[in-house]
Image (cartoon, rainbow, N blue to C red; front, top):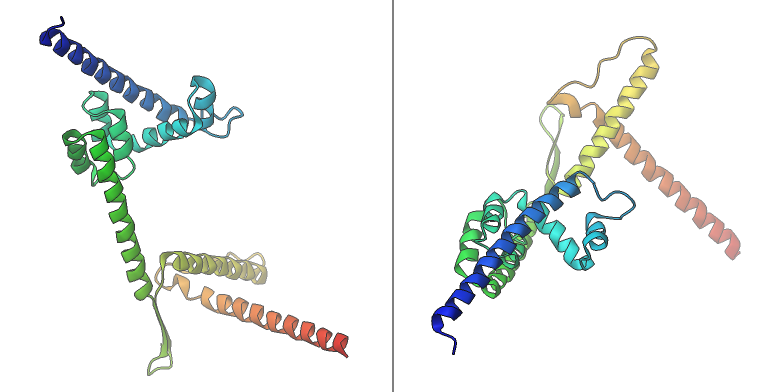
Length: 240
């Protein structure tokens, strides 16, 4: 009959070997991250995951997870170190990297060390739900905080003040950049061989392109109205 000591020893061997496997997995992930960053897979494969699926026989979904975790650990040194030392299992690290950031890594590392893999998965699911709710609240605050005010002061100068959503602001900035380039090209055509200085530096750098932007927008609207009138007239003639 087996003694309790023999079973304990067997259990210890299982735990020790599992820790060695996790450490080997950490090394594997380091290699995958470097291989991916250096585009070693770009030899006819669509992605690093596709290459892993072909080369080492991983299911494509599992391969994608390996690449995702490998990339994430590049910015999460505490979790990477814990996996390399066998302090956290790959299952826990895989779950934690779904929500961990450099700011939250230390707290999540403590969660990983304190609970089972199932417990960590539950915590991560709850964390992601909280993150989604926080993101929704932030989006709502941004939406409510949007504003655009245009008015004249006592000198007749037009004052424009606005607070735009990031994606809308990015479009406006691109439009202003395009208008600056148009203005610069017009200046070069007018000046010929004369050296033309670029649009003035901040804060006045956005003033010169504004008329070009307004002119382009107005011209586009006029052309649209003309096309609508022509189409309407053609439809009226066909109806007679």
